[in-house]
Length: 385
Image 1 (tube, rainbow, N blue to C red):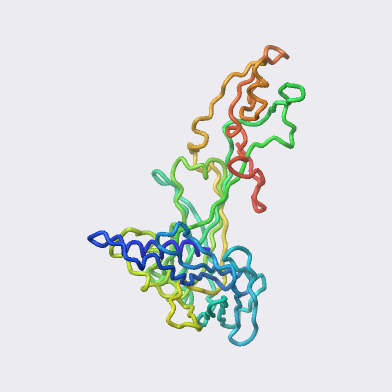
Image 2: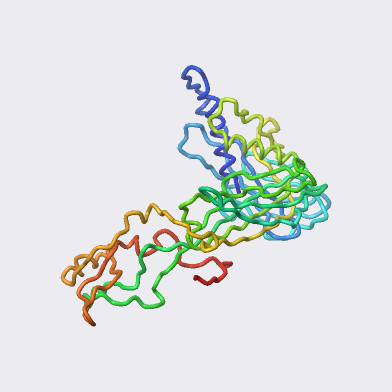
């Protein structure tokens, strides 16, 4: 969900209007907290997964950039019949696990202590299921792209993605220091950590109109760009792309938001008043609402990229730049290892007797300090050459 991004862009747009004056001017109205409702949602039909985010705008000079709405009731109403209640799943986040019929249109009603809001009629748009993903290694980056074909009813598209990747610390944790015996011991097999995982979700607004292309074919639309040296492609990488069809009004709204998020700082950026919404405050119709609710069916596609598919891929992880090995002799074991800041890595032995270890810091041997050692549920096993 991009609810936080919408609020941040609106705040920045207002700031631009003030900063672009020729002479320094600090109008008192900039401290007013209008607390306009910011709403973003997608009504999923034919499957569970409807989501909606609610927040309030904040004063320009406030340190708070995201103010979630936590005291709202959200209901989706069928134009023909039926009502379904959203459940608050987190601050400002509301979800619906029930499956909505594909055969009717909907409205969303939002009730807060101060006002009641109602969306315009939402016509679910079926999303074409011919989504394909691919990637290409370019000079300095890898481009991940999506291709799809628009239809008579689905001409405008918006994409989101979820990334997961595997990474490793520079040195393994095959050994540990046992304070009781004051000796270095082999780490039990079940406690050895060889790889970890991190994840991110998209924050950019990615959209396209099929009307721009011959045969409504959107080919190789860039979804994500991964720069050289990124750890994301150091071992194994996964991206889940979510494709949704939206109507023209939603496309115009998101295109306006995209231009401002990509061009923050331009004095010719449109004012916030130019950003529309399909949600109205029916208690106070003069109050501006920011955001958009769309509906339809989401199509998802996952793709993996293994580092060996890219050929040599050098990784630079800033947290590991200073990782090195230092010799720790037997008489220094307790001093260096007892606090668990230094970790034995490689034994130095003469025959069966080890008299020292090459050691490194714990952040260079335990990748769990930067991620988790539990693979995502969907992660597929693969062989390393």
